[in-house]
Image 1 (tube, rainbow, N blue to C red):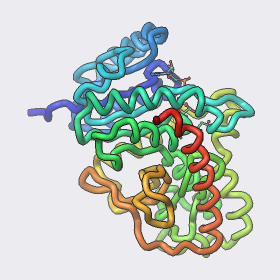
Image 2 (spheres, helix red, strand yellow):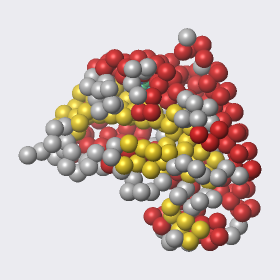
Image 3 (cartoon, rainbow, N blue to C red):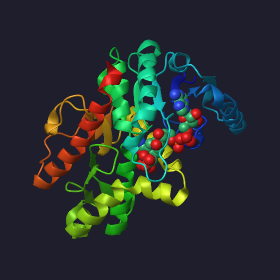
Length: 327
Ligand code: NAD
Ligand code: LMR
């Protein structure tokens, strides 16, 4: 007998990221190959026709695990009784913008959706915010949903984590799966800090294997930080398939476990590592049994402290910029 279906809400269903994401979820890539899913799709009224076209394509895939689809422009209907939410729907940036420039366009969306989640979702709903600026939008969502566990509102740093793994693997001449213990700290913005100090490849310390600290500091960190902008420059549109893949990785590991591996998630700070409580900050975590646990007790050296303070200062600025919205 098959398991009861889980309900997952996805916003921005007519957009670029969802054109990849929805098909991966329906294929069982997030909840597992034996877990039926019901997709609850939210987009704006003017995008409903396009969402219906995507639903026609989902039908045409005849996915065995897809047991239902709800299409709506009402957040409460989309979030009714859901187990998980992927909040993608928001404006993307174009060339010349930083992600925080989207704050005025997108912040209100997350206030409205946070309130709707608070009212309609299951009390243990797992929420991933993808829409930019992701950390601060997750902060707005968390503050607008006071009856949900704050720790269940998370922001996507996994694309940055995967980008760092890929660049480091290429430099070290190993496969991405051989790299372990990467951490991406802070904001999903160019100030993020991709930290390879604890990383290993084939059991060997990665910094020793690469043996080029100047390359790490002056090339790797800014390359990962500015990768989103480089993709916009090259493609004329922001990353979509890789963003969808990272969203699947983030939620799959949270739901099904990360098998002891470190992954980076933007989560509300518990005050550790000198990050004020409640700020949504990228940290290394290990997931198991449907929960994530921060990797604790890591040494923060002088360089790391400087990097973490810089990304924290930006997050505090963003938080202060939306303070009025939350009154
Ligand atoms: P897109 O413009 O192709 O699609 C956005 C969709 O959201 C559209 O269909 C739009 O109608 C919908 N939308 C807008 N307001 C909405 C609302 N209030 N409720 C529901 N739906 C709404 O954009 P995209 O390329 O899919 O990107 C979506 C967001 O994801 C952007 O903010 C982008 O910057 C962000 N992003 C984040 C990461 C990350 O790593 N965190 C990576 C890539 C993209
Ligand atoms: C990315 O990192 O690719 C996304 O956040 C899109 C962007 O604006 O950079």
